[in-house]
Length: 147
Image (cartoon, rainbow, N blue to C red; front, top):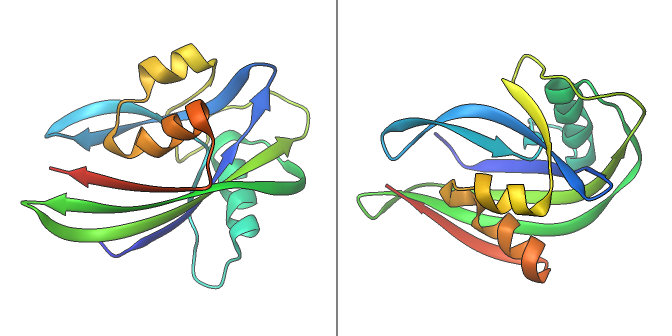
């Protein structure tokens, strides 16, 4: 796997944030993980274009207005203490048009979560930055996922 450049949306309704669910291999086990809508920026794509495309693909919701930059996460995935790849993920506050989200062909589930639910459900190694941002704010976070 090569390096990863990602764009992710923090979409809020009231005190809840929209999350999308998938099953991932973590620590040798298949685990349901909850992530913000978003994903890989494709070749030739701008961050806001990737953000809009990914939100639509994963939730069926259309972004409206201009997303506002929140923070960036730079991380590395390690296996046997050797770097396998690096990632850079940009996070934006985003608004969506009317309607309820529905899981698209890239995700298994969608769910609105309050902050207590986020703290309980976000257990993947790469969730550390988002959780720190929720608690303290900030604009740059480093992360490592070691297996």
